[in-house]
Length: 236
Image (cartoon, rainbow, N blue to C red; front, side, top):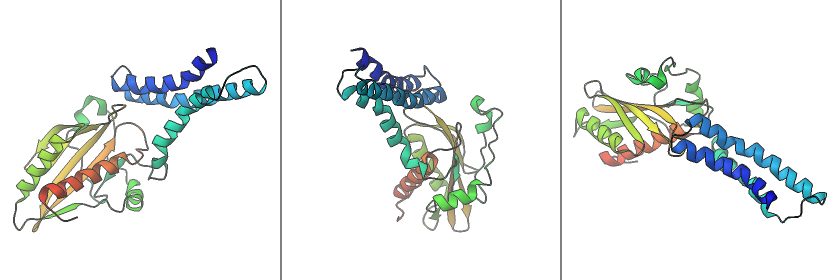
């Protein structure tokens, strides 16, 4: 029984990190750190169980060792798809002239943070996310304000997003997206400008915490612009 309890500790730590961060008891970063702590704990308890069995100290089946290894498997499954992606936490569709944040710097959590787009990210984004391009909308049968209104309505209804600033005259929509499990917040801004007979829709998404977003910001931009195409009836 004692071995089973000890073997369950890493998994309990993993679940505690997720649940306590999701419910706001722990900060997102602390919850995530607790989540990751389950991996070395799992390796330690697995080693103890395996060594104990080999020396005849522990008499048990494979369940404790399997339970101890579960955090490693779960963390690896969650993180491995992002390892091959660009090591960035600030992504945009326009790396030459990225949308700037109008009001994000005034949010308490952003006080003192540099919200400028890192120039080094441009080449990484171009190489890692070549599909991220501005959305160009023909204005022959619509106006730029109609495009803006569609973008605003879509952003306002997007699950997990909170709009903090909007300026139709300047074509700006700003807010933040909150992840489901750990409640990490990423700042987003959408810029819509008219250029000749086109409206150009650009988007930027920047993580508040961490240096590697594991593809979250690019995925958010990609999904939003795909939905914009659908809402406007544009071909893919």
